[in-house]
Length: 414
Image (cartoon, rainbow, N blue to C red; front, side):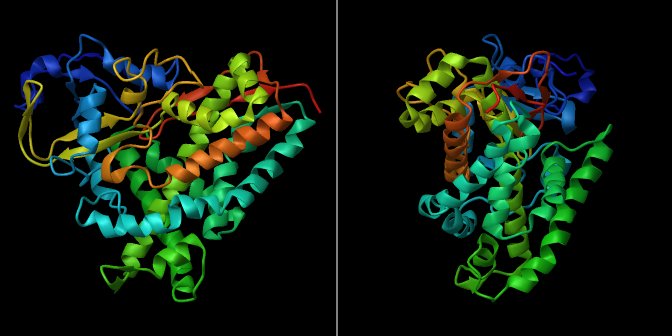
């Protein structure tokens, strides 16, 4: 497994703009995760390490190691463009989902369209249905006294919510989840195998959605997909290829990251009964706790493409270079948050980039926060005391959106 360590290479293997002392061995898709994902990604932020390092892994790319640089890059779409937002480059070139790979001003009307279905008012209108889904999943578990939370809840809850929003049958969920997982953590032993898996998943999304969009167009439906495909952008009806692209992006965003985050949160709570007691004693604290947990357990590592040659931190970033921007670096930096590894539900203002920043700040953040809040409210009202099953071992996996599985919990039945 890859660590974060100097990586000696032959001079002719290193791009001319990369100093030899900036070359490190780091592979986002094959990290040393024995201590957990956040712990692994934060090894990038060693005090003796420069702000920018370069790895030969995944086609070769820069990596930011400091929170202020990550925030600056997210907020500068000219110098740090969204032309390719995934590593390796081969994946970034194929990932052309709208509006993720667009920059202002082209990005703006498409983002406005996405916001019409994911804004705070629309999400609040869904609260009753989201709560019903959460209760339906938790109630049967209470009498069992044990659960693989990953399978029994995290794998199902955000997917059921999103399938309800887009009015798709739940029996289709497994195939869509498989496509989503393949895109953010592509399987394969070689880069070619991973890229074949990646491209196959994207085409799978398109093949699935194409007949559904054709059937719903112009029917006046009020589900998320119908609203998108019947919308206008720049005063013109949304073309079918763009509607297909946007809805595929919505599905990808709605099927993976919340499930991953839920697993991280429940591992933490199962090991920290004092924090659980704070929430059980004061349910009004839960929304504030959610923001602190969002800060503490980020899972995404975005990428950007250098727009023009620029000198920074003693190196030259060349136009077309790719750079990885781990969102964990801000929330878990001691320069940004005091005692960042400690979860403090009374922290005055948690600072983080868990939802990104700038014009690409996550459009689904209101939905994610509500899903997390409702989960804690409904779980703790029924299962206020629980712990990790003795001898069980969570299974961590790294990628563009990292995750953890096999979260086994126990409690007193009934």
